[in-house]
Length: 179
Image 1 (tube, rainbow, N blue to C red):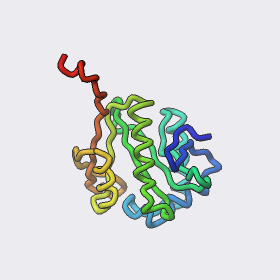
Image 2 (cartoon, rainbow, N blue to C red):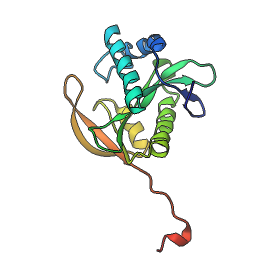
Image 3 (cartoon, rainbow, N blue to C red):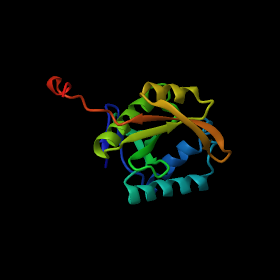
């Protein structure tokens, strides 16, 4: 059952029966080229369990994403806590290779951002990318994130650029702006 959607995508939560989808995404060497390389089947099972556990405890995960048109698995996109900062979440998107160059990552990210700021009341979002992954950098910047810092990330401790997007300020009616 989906809880979030966009014009071409539907989001739902992971379940144990989604292991084949998780395996197809996270064992793909191209999808994971900038994420530390493909995961082993055992590591994928651990990641799937982590995502399901995070959903149970926090109501967050990198949710699986499916095409609205035919139900095909297209990847995942979602949120996780960021360094225990209250109201700040890290956003991520992993799109399956057959759907690259369709701007599904951007569409998924926009839906997640709307959910984070609207439903969850997030104060800010952060996103990072491998320093060599220029497509991710361009997407993050197109979404309005601004560079904030670098920090070691992943098993190799790669110095990774991170960006932040603060909660959008609501526009005040014309007469309210001068008060």
